[in-house]
Length: 207
Image (cartoon, rainbow, N blue to C red):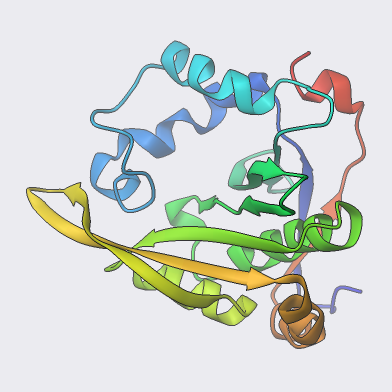
């Protein structure tokens, strides 16, 4: 349950129609380059919509899940997802992004709690992996709070701003999450609470 002073944020499945609303986040190239090494230049809204289509289209079983966090006035605040899910191996990748003006307020942790519960409690995955640029201190801090452990790196594999940075590989097992879950929730519930808004999954997935 949210504490009295916690900010309540709407949390719902993401759709292709949301892309124009979040496109501006990725036009700040220096900021976007902290989170995505695959963006060589800022892209158009149409280009972004096409690049997201595969992730948001419905498949059976779903290859990924994406959710959007919104303020009470509908302003997008962050996105978080599960990607590259292998039901045979029991693993997937956890990416997240928070709008610049809303960082350091617990949203990345709150969104990730929801996705970790989805991954381990409902999808019965065994582990999740994520990757971050070695100088991305905010991501490192958020992942450490969740119980992720750094497992290695790809040396000088992320090129940005004329420099090469290491990519840090970080992972969490379902058993790790079970041990850390209550602590993590206690750490974020005073500042940020996600209120899930159920929608028609097929419609929201852009099918």
